[in-house]
Length: 367
Image (cartoon, helix red, strand yellow):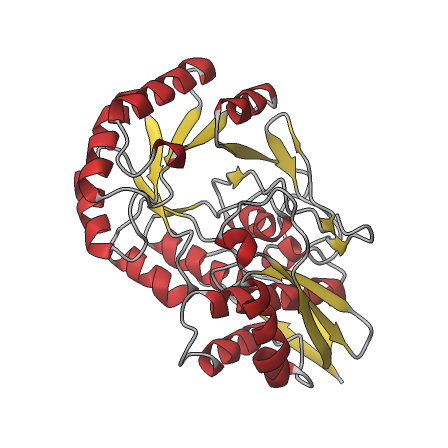
């Protein structure tokens, strides 16, 4: 018997109706693909996992989450036992149930990263079952031919030169290499050189990777403010909410963060306390697309901008294209190559795929 699913998103354009046959989940599995060139830290040790959700009609949904071996174990035990036999099309209800089922030990961190991969696989199934790209599920009027603006995150001068030559009109300078107590003048010099190279109309941003304290963050913000920096990203630890309250009030440069926040409740706190001018959820970690939709709803109601982490990758890109009136997509990871179907950045812009679901497939050569 056919089943009607309608997802309503208050504060955004009306979502379409779509008709899906009931899809029983028959198998859920996860794997951690090799990622040569990935950072030699937790991002590899507890790295990205690919989640496959199969249904009784032969469809396979692909999602990407996090948590490495721990995430795989969670997917193939707790979440598999919870979801096998359930209707895959009821994505929002399954997301809520996964979060409630793991709430005693998983409101943040690795558990939510694993849930993200399952949620994205379910959304991929939803798109494939409806013969639509996920962006069209989110917004029937989305223009798939529209070229979206991008920015490139660079880690050194060589990266920056490549970004200049690729036509990016916005660059984010990752300044972790300057250490925990950097000389603000050195960072200001880097920003000045970047501003001169890009010109007055481009955007320049700074990412501190949560390495600093409040005093260092304010001194750097004062030093770089003359160069019209769009935002200072994650200067202190993500749980230092009182510290972010001080920075949001005193910094002459807007504060961005949220890359390491989880689920709608976590982002609601950031929004209610007005701790960030720009929110940067990672769709593969924060709870998946279901959570990202909630974040967009809350943030737009509060007039806070959302610019997802790694937005040029297909999962976040669908939401950016469909839900954001001021789209901007961050460059993806060069070392995550196990999936095909990633759109290419050309002359600093990127175009959404028109393939069903998220438009990705497992590469037969392993990347």
